[in-house]
Image (tube, rainbow, N blue to C red; front, side, top):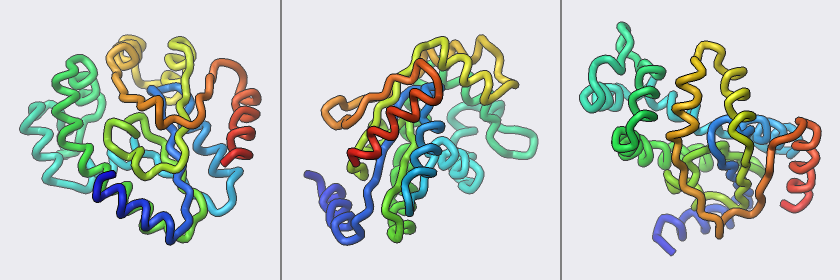
Amino acid sequence: MSFVAVIILKLKEVSKIKVIGIVGKMGCGKSTISDYMASKLTSSIKLDVDRLAKQIYNDNVDIVRKIANYFGAGTLNLNGTINFKHLGRKVFSDWSEMRKLNDIMFPLIFDEVDNFIKNNSDKEYIIIDAAVLFDAGIDCFCDSIIWVKASKRKRENFIKCKDSDICVEDIRQRIQNQKIKINKEKVNFIVENNLTPESLFEKIDIIISKL
């Protein structure tokens, strides 16, 4: 066990927080599940790691400058902020470019998740919605991990509903090229999200009863 993992374990023993990680590819329903769990679990709070990453982009001038240097000035809008559509096309079309971005962002994401947990030590449950849960090492914070799966068609439809501006070609490129790490030995629950929202919530209710 690493030094960081030991420290995290000691902190959780003192605070009695239960951290629940929700992992899966884009469009599988992680946000729906994390929102539902946050509404059902008393004294809970959720952390959307995608939003956290965008907040880092918005707040950290050095990171914006580094991304522009790595990926070109086209990744910036005229006002100097990150052009997420342009950056997304670049990294989802070339895995080596994605690795560059991950090398920049993952250490920052890890530190921010650590701070979020410490700053919410009064909660009983912290729900972390993160496709990069294992890739960024955030799994070390989790007491339970839920792996969400869904069909390609369902994921395409969900992404289109969430962002009407994104074209079908970009959706399919992102789905095809997204690679996420899953440590199956650390997964506690697997949820297949291919039917109705009601059936999904029934599955989550069962999981909640076992936490």
